[in-house]
Image (cartoon, rainbow, N blue to C red; front, side, top):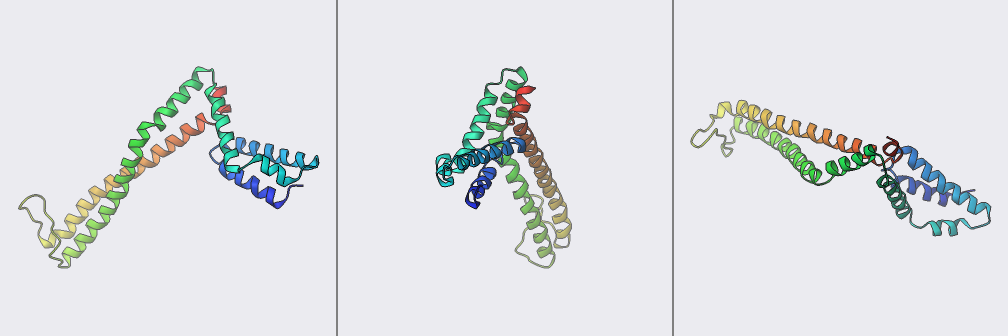
Length: 189
């Protein structure tokens, strides 16, 4: 019977395998659990078995690597196209798109809040806040809130569109990842 220490090892392995599809993660954990139970049944101390298995993080990495190597051996045209598509969308393009969309979404979102606060403060008489349409075209204090709401709505709209775009792009990448890495889906297709 596997001890609490062994169960802890299996739980860690399961967490480190979270990037694999659930059925593959469960298969891997059950395989290791079976290996541990078989060793114990053959009289090998559990501590020795776990020691031989090594760090659960490294074991999980080996499982993920094995799955990727199996996928890379895909002979089908669709499997190869899946790999190419995944690397094209997850590579250089992501290095540019994700940071830009995240910066615009969160930066413009913060600016929207600050613009509205500035409009409120200027309306209440904070003369140190300047609002203008262009050089020499200062907004009158009584129109500060309207101006802040209009500009805030535009900036907020850009922030919201960037946030939605970021979410959709990350969902797209996750879907591509799921399609490519499961091995069984991609290689059979």
